[in-house]
Length: 329
Image (cartoon, rainbow, N blue to C red; front, side):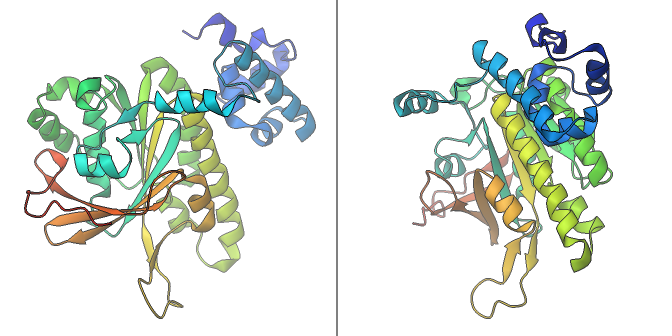
């Protein structure tokens, strides 16, 4: 049940007709108003963008008063203190955790991209288990949401990873909520409903495997590029606001494509272009190296660009043997 102070009727400017339109669109709380943003609120309610922005700003002001969001102007020292206390979730490999500065952060979008078989989905499956561990083991004793767009989720894999890491596999499966998106529009609808599920289940990890696949398949050719990027931009900003507002870690996977105009170096690049690149807080490239995998920090506001080695095994993501577990600066 949503707390009384978070319900839409606690905002003076939300009348019965407006509240009904918002509820029908899955916007049930003040938090949802902040996450969706003025553009979507304008479309849902049928008001101009300025009125929608005013409504969203009042919602944000109320959340600041409730200490559910940070104030607009704060000292950098206060931000530093909060950053030092931010939650992190282990990937399952201490090497990969070190690359990420201790694990995958909450309030951020972490993107893993690479070719098929590079370990993207295995990272997702492993983290669905590690988030359930205690804090001393790299988890947050919490549940996970898995948004599956490519039919990659395998409960039997979760079972084996949980069993090998000392968890009850049946209980581990019960703490993972799976949503399957059949097209980009369905993916956007599910994403818009994430906040309600996160609040209800007290979720600390959202997996989206993969973020761009449907957009890539549905919008073909240069004629549709503009519309695809606009839709993708809206989707990426929605998951980023969800991560920040609900203090949840968001992990997305991405495919790669060839750039035929590249004559030297690696011709492959992640799909989605600058829209995905600018919205992801951290970007990690994955590639095969024999039986091992190599992760490289490509973009981060605070981490150095370097590489780490990890492997895929019975426990999901793990460290390779001592002979091959070397850092690559």
